[in-house]
Each structure stands twice: as C-alpha cells, then as structure tokens.
Image 1 (cartoon, rainbow over the protein chains, first blue to last red):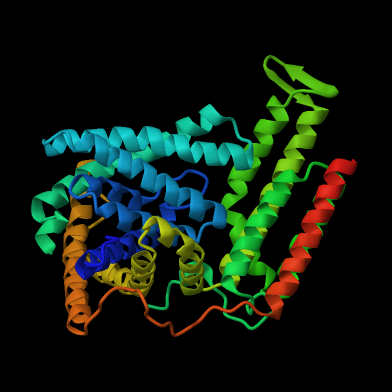
Image 2 (image 1 turned 90 degrees about the vertical axis):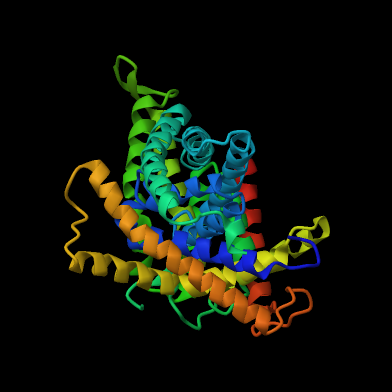
Length: 168
Length: 266
C-alpha cells in the first residue's frame, strides 16, 4: 500500500470493515463492555481467514471502539496492537492450510490463547490482578465469542463472497 | 442516528476543549505513567488534586465522569478483594488457609483502587473533551514520523476518517435490518444456540452486502473525482499548538516533577 499507486478500493473497503466493527460493537453493546470482555464484534476476527487485508479494518475498528472504553488511551494503543499482532500471526499460520473449517479452527485457537494472553498482560499490569487467573477468564470470554464467530462467519462466507480480491 | 452518543464526546469551549488533541493525548499518557510511579499517600493526594484540576478546567458535569467509572466498578471491587485476601507482608490481622488479611495487603488494595480510578478519570477527560475526529487527526499527526519507514500514514488517516463517517450510517443500517427481520416474525431471543446463530447470520448477510456496496460506490466516486492518495492534500481543520497547550504542558511537567520528588523523598 505504500507504493505510489494508491488502491482506493482497498482503503475504502478496510474503512467500511472498521465502521462495521464499531457499528456491531455499539448496537450489541449490552454485552460488549463490563468486567467480562464479551464483545460480539470480536467475531469479525474470523474474517482474516478469507483475506489478510481485513486485518487493517478490524484493527482500526478496535481503535475507534476503544475510544469509548473507560481505560481510554491504554485500551486504544494496547488493544489495537494486540489485534494487529494476533491477526497477523493467525494469517501467517493459516495460509499453509486450504480447508476453510481447519483454518477457522486454527483462527479460534490462536485468537483465544494469544488475545487472552496479551489482554491479561495489560490488566495484570494496570490492575495488579493475578496474571494466570485473568488470562483464563479473558481467554474463556474470547473463546465463547470466537466459537460463535466461527459458526456465524462460516455461514456468512457460504452466502457472501468475503474475498476482497473479488471486489476490486 | 443521534440516538447513540458516539465516542461520548461532550462539545464545549473550556480550557481543555480548546487544547490541541495531540497535546491532550501525550499529556494524559504522561499522567498515567506518573500515577504508576506514585508510591506514597502524599503522591496519591497530589495525583488526585491534579486530576480534579484537569476535570474542573474541562467544565464537564461530574455525571459524565461517573458514567466512565461505573462500568468498571465490578473489576475494581474484584481487584480490591483479591488484594485484601491474598496480599502478604506487614502485620497479619486474620489468617485462614491460604487466605489472610495483612496491613500491606490492605494498603496495596487501597492504592490500586485509587490508581485505577485516577487513570479512568483522566482518560475520560480526554475522550469527553475530544471528538473522535480530533483524536484520529492527532493520531495521524503523531504517526507522521513513521512515514520514513514506509508506514502508510495518509492511507491510515483516510481509513480512520471514512470509518468515523460511516459508523452512524452502519449503526442505523444494522437497526433497520434488525427491525425488518423482526417485522417478518424473526425472534432473536428464542430457540437453541444454533438456531440463534443462524438468525444472527440473517442480519449479517444484508449488513455485509450493504457495507460492501457502499464501499464500492464511495471508491468509484473518489476515483472519478481524481483521488490520487494523501500526499500533498490540504486539510480543512489544521492542528495548531496554542497558549493553552503550553500552560497545560507546564502544569503537567510541574505535577510530574512533584510526584517524582515525593516518590524519592518518602
């Protein structure tokens, strides 16, 4: 994207995915915030198995959604970095596989463990809560939403062409 | 569309409102680091006075700050309980199995609760007094040095502003789709888990299609108007540091210095 030829379509698509992430976070906000992290929009993480370019949109969506968070600037920076790192690792691992269901399973596993780990570091440092206990609870919440996400995004992928290359 | 107060922004013309968003972002980060450094009662009292001063100069009603703390009270209480019962060191007041209440544990619990509330209050000042558009402008400006390592700063900034523009539109769209499905008899809160997930898909399919279509239309509109990338484009709102930012910076530096002195002195 840093080349002189700017792909307008890619930028706009990523922006729209970010807006979608924020919209889903807000419309279903009753379960998005609060002590136990259960943000329905997190299921969009599963989109990365269809196209790596979703990473941009989802990370920006996290950034905007976290402007609303009570931990403010800490959540904005750490939450966004967490998403970029986790999704990039998911992408690097899943590109070796071809079956969508296998990809989905790997995506759920990595996101659950790694996202929980990175968020637990943040909470353990800021709140001085016991690290492994926090890792467990955060990962459990993430596992729940990612399992839902895997099923929902898989069914969505059966109906909508989620590959961004087809849209260019 | 106006039902949801996006980003919690409260418009105003106070001292804090008129500060440059970049200065606000950096100064609130510095404050958070300083609060982490505080390790004595006197330092916490000073941090608290600083937070109150910032809140007062933002001219925003205390109710909004309470709204920021409220969702996290559960977490704060949980942390306090864990600290109280699992803390070690100092005088032991009560002891049962692995649980014990000690003087150091109690002190730590209070410190952590205060620190947490202070961080929330100051972060809340930032999000209450700065619109999401201003925050993204600040992020763009602060990321500019990354241009040197070929990080696509302009593209990211454009994505941010398009995303912010379309959030209310897509929130509207989501609610419309929800209502459309309801009016056709869909019930989203009944049935087995699998049945509910399938209903969720019935919302996401039209939502994704419409978002993709909007992106398509917008990209075509931009290209037909000759969008060539962000390099050299001018801005409608130009960020400028003003007198307020200098005063704010001096105030914060003095405060941090005081916290550091108290940290080493006591």
